[in-house]
Image 1 (cartoon, rainbow, N blue to C red):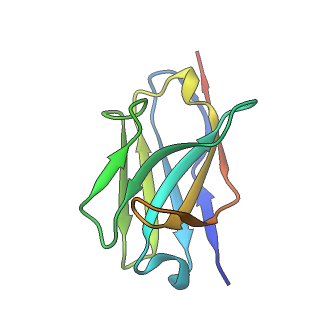
Image 2 (tube, helix red, strand yellow):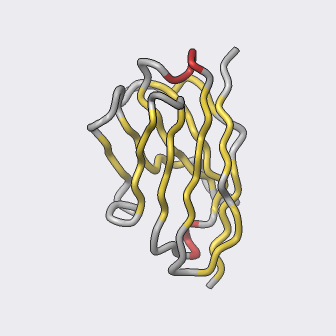
Length: 118
């Protein structure tokens, strides 16, 4: 069964940091690129970051480049999103997903809420 479980969201002041985690079952992790997306209220879900299998290659949306870092621990089936210098416009539900690095996404987690206060 496909399973992706996000954690680490919360309320933080602007300028602060949060680290999101995504725990994946083996069948959803090995061999796949891993992605982070986000969806703010009233907006479409948007790409945030991706990391290739088994690691090394990464890419980011322009809105988070230089502030967010995606990483993965293949021994633990975990993917992380370190978010620094957070802004109120980063407020959204953040989703972990697996898929192809430059192709489709296959499975989604349930999301974790990130709220950045000004």
